[in-house]
Amino acid sequence: FYFDEVKLWSYSTVSNINDVDRVYIRPKGSSKAVLTNLLSLPSLNHQGVNRSIERDTRCFIYRHCRYYYNFEEAMFKPALFRPSLSCQKLRDDHIKGLTEVEASAKFTIFGQCLIDVPMKSNTRILLEEVIHPFTIFQVFSVILWNIEKYHIYAQAILVITVMTVYLSFSETKRSLKAIREMAIHICRVKCLRRDQGTKIQSTPCPSFEIDSTSLVPGDVFEVSDNLFL
Image 1 (cartoon, helix red, strand yellow):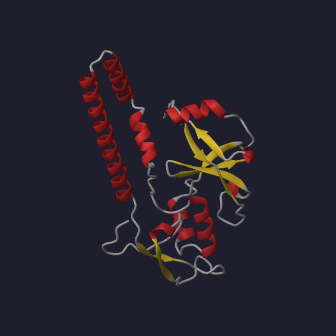
Image 2 (cartoon, one colour; image 1 turned 120 degrees about the vertical axis):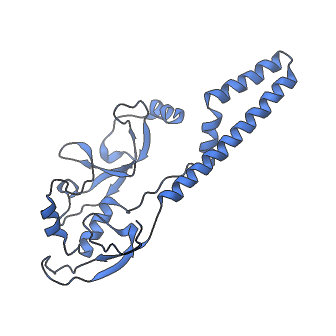
Image 3 (cartoon, helix red, strand yellow; image 1 turned 135 degrees about the vertical axis):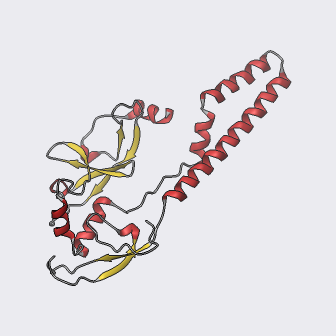
């Protein structure tokens, strides 16, 4: 938290959307700013792509959701899969699955079908533990007791503080690893894919086995016995 706030205060500035590599995100109702990378996305001119993404644009990922810059409204907007369509319209448009071109374009827009929890580096976790207010208080206590000639007491506090930081570091590292392993799950699924020139009403459409990470909004796949997604 402290490092992001220092960076925000030290060298952040208002700039043109095409000239920046990173952006600060401050969620509504929160005082914490998050620094994230800004990515470039090539234009995707074909049927079924959001009109605001039919030209070269910039995007960032925040809380596993992608946000694209809408040049018409001059703001970032989340990538959504046509939420205004009715259930009947969704069924009619996707009953035979997507073509490879449509699936590839949507994969570029939405990314992998995967919850990839980022892992903090050991240095980052250790620094967060060291700059914790309680740890800083203990360090000043050690300095104070040394000044007052209570060397044994100061050494005892120092040993306890080091052990506490190490145990907290180990527990944080183990918890992050467990959350990441619990969130990531990849399996094989049977998905419908029709040829580029095939009409949606045509039958039948072949099914292909793909990784679950390659699924995109609009895909039709088989829910088999013992399938776990």
